[in-house]
Image (cartoon, rainbow, N blue to C red; front, side):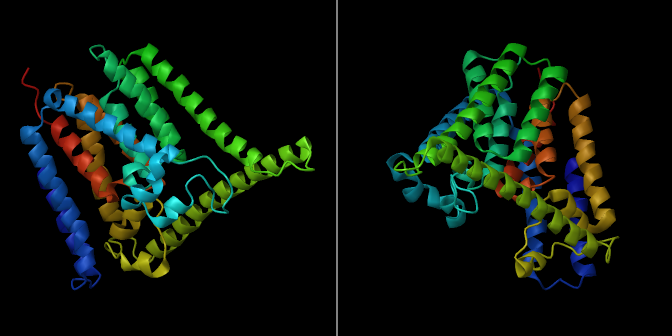
Length: 353
């Protein structure tokens, strides 16, 4: 059923390409390729997925990621100049621990994703995997708490909201271990304040101490904090501006949209800043409703079919993707989209036990 519907959506994408006279534009077909690749991962996961056998390898994977991000965060052994450039762009590395004005700011972990927002989503995948159920081990409890803390250290605002959503959902509906859940929240808050304190302390230390009084020192720190606040607001305003442009453009082709049309964004040096607006612009009202109906169907099936393996894990990761899609495009990332299809395929595999 799922494979058929995803194939139908791929056919619809091809239809929008043809309708917009872009059959000769090779880059548009990459969106179709992504769907086909996702279907293959979904089918493969449905056939071979075994969560019990996979979980030990996921523990190892998370431990490796923790080590990688630890080296990156503290720049141990000049990690950010030697290793991180293979994963992150020069721009992200240049402003690591700085705001766009070059002033000290909280570090936003880039990790293997090369982007703090996507890195937060990756660790939310592990939050979902190691959610403390009744039969969870102590090592899984620790890995859950660490995963929550790493999401916090990515400093993604939408990530914070998504994390809160999956923690509350787990707390209320999945009957997760309430003690471990509360502990993770407390540790996460502690990590947030430590991260903020470290950059404020760094700001204060960098100010010359010659004839500058303590009050001037404090004033300078407050100026940096205000600058960070203003830049965050401008970032949000920038998103609204992009959405406004896309919605105005969408009104010219409201039914079937413009198709993938990546050149539109390349030429304008624009980032879509949100999956929902992007899907609406690309595929029109018909395609948007088609895709959203498909997502709702998957979510509903995951909720009501308790006999499916890892359905609760898939639900939590689904929530994380749904929330972060408001201001990001997680399914456009190859790694995150593969995780989505694998976890959904595994969740829809009937439990033989």
